[in-house]
Image 1 (spheres, rainbow, N blue to C red):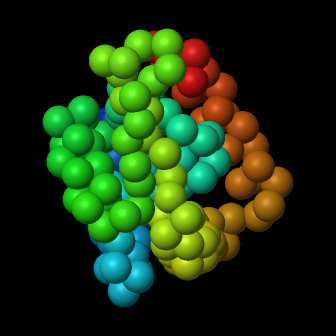
Image 2 (spheres, helix red, strand yellow):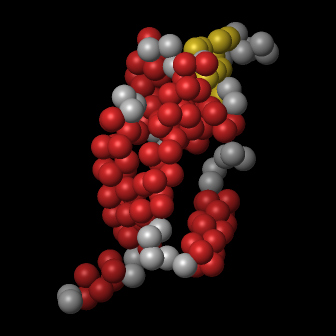
Length: 148
């Protein structure tokens, strides 16, 4: 193994990117069968969990660039999965709401996400998984730029 390969083998950001690329590729296939893309599912999941959000907040929480997210939301709105409403305190700001149809798609597709997660952790003991998840939560709190 070359020195660079050794460095990459122990470089956590590199490993996380490889893991997430593989996870996203696998989950994309499963979600396609449900008629939803990975970015759409991220938006549905955040809205189902967190409730209505602005596009800026949703961009941060879904880890999707705002321009890409706006196009994704256009498609989702046309399909009746979300609706945009003016914010009560600032009419320039739109809040994204999950519709009943969007909630149904989320409920139908979420098990595919859970199955993909289960495959990700196959062979990892529950205590190691819990410690890993706790460590990731701590890292996220440390590096995030927003309160959410």
